[in-house]
Length: 177
Image (cartoon, rainbow, N blue to C red; front, side, top):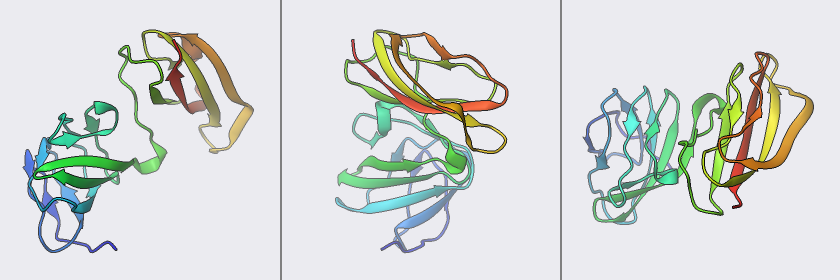
């Protein structure tokens, strides 16, 4: 059960109140850690503005081991798994955004979300060989275009769908070699 706490101003070391477990985070200060609330505590953070959540291997574990730039309306669920150490167990982007992977080589079997806005080509992460599945969505209506999907296997760094001003691309890829 979620209980709304008082709004919390963003801070490098974020201190959440004791009045709930669902907090609006205001401000744009980069967050690098969250103060302890007790091992096993689960909180949900609703971001009112754009800020950076900085990944740390123990203090603030984020999906994909990468920093996240929030947007107004994004939400993150965290669990304190050790004293002062938090793990993001769920991240929901506002307005249907998906995480954008960094273009670095990665291990075989790694899965990544992949998105390209209207007018931007869909490009696989660099390194290795990637299998992919992409939906082609009409930017104006939100309906699926025809053809509705693109699937295949290609080398890292390959542009798999050309820039299209009337369509955006949403999907995923995983490294196979």
